[in-house]
Length: 125
Image (cartoon, rainbow, N blue to C red; front, side, top):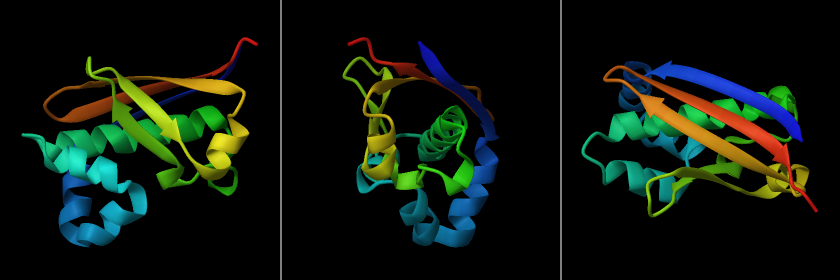
């Protein structure tokens, strides 16, 4: 059963400007160390940072709790399977809130924008 859906689109330039303006403080507030390392290792790191930002926003919308609820930026970590498929690893109160659910994630991008779509689905017991 679907418990929530969320979608987010962001311009890559917006993330680039934020990183240039706020530097490591911005990165450390939003991303796990593993996400930062992953993105920095890529040919186009800004595209990957934007994808992770959009994914976290999409998950927060799927939770439908707003910023006052279970969602915290670093409690949602975007990882990639060996095949490249994006996936979500949850921590803390977000993991607790979704312990009986799974998060499905899809990411896509153009040269200028990234879109993320998240579905929270109740696990079949």
